[in-house]
Image 1 (tube, helix red, strand yellow):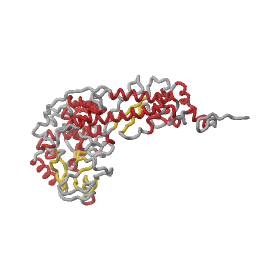
Image 2: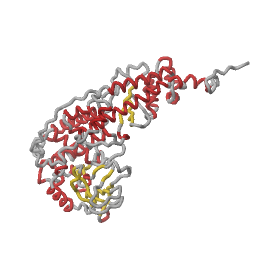
Image 3: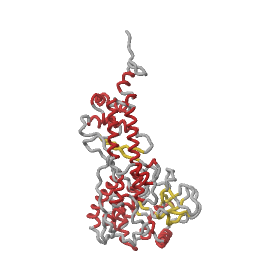
Image 4: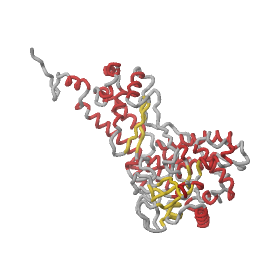
Length: 488
């Protein structure tokens, strides 16, 4: 599961260009593989969690009031998951976890970390919980969460954990740019807390805490926290967070709730339900997020789907400050709910976002069409831009987009056909399969955008432009484009 709000590192246009779809060159950094805080003996991967560790975890859950009679933690193809202990109807509660087992802001405030940081309220919520996670790992068997920590994976297949060689497989993709941006962000947060908290509280962190350790904690939160538990609500929910994702689950309703239980409902519980009927012995699944793209799934969880609706590409458009009509264009954009920059997510096999072409026409407008930017048209210009303005303007938006697509496609080191052939290879490593799937999906979307504007170029002569529409409104041109002559 993931709860940290995804930081969208969209591709911003260089100031001297109208549009750029090419990601900025990422900085690859070879990651240290020494995790001194988490020795291999404790850094058990989910796939290799021992039977003894799972039994300890089950006993821990039971002793702290977690209800697990209908579902049980078990080894599954994904690593660990929840398996039905009996036939379960849709909507059945399969797990209840009391708040005392959560790792959240209240747990931070009650911990040594909270006392060292004034309650932890001045820290970003995810940073505070990440520090709690690292502190409890450092305590080993003395931690009240020790049985839970023992079954956490050392890594996931999230791109934040990929090696330099593996990252080269997503060269040219927006996913690579976003991954490196996220790691830079985590690095910045680590440097801050390392100086102010970790090094200043050696009694809490007697061992060496590395950036890799901090990145691990970030990755655990990103992959295991339920999507709706963001910001101040951020929490790790042991047991419930073992539930895995299935593309076959398409219901958008939440599969969980936080409710009161016991006398007067004072005991707060996290309650997980199954969204579909499940047979005894079968794994329980939920839908993590219907709206995430494959790149976001790869970044957050370390998997992708074959569903084309998960393939997308973010186009970033920007009004250049060097544009002689910069002020007017910015004013018009802001009056219509946009700004100096606008982001448009293009999804495979779906139409372009409605406002994208309108915004493009605004960016490209100039020359003899610039009169539409005058204050006289301020309240009506957006409506005019929703339809073709002039042959020159429409040709400009087609050229800009097609040139940008060509440039972006040139950044990949494989073609769509080569990727599709590679996907047919047997026994592909999971990370390589993710890389091929994401880059093929991005290229398909870019090719789709190029095809849309190529077709538009071929239709330029048949479009109706502003001047023709205006003459029709004045009654000077007929419906078929003929000039109407008036007789005295």
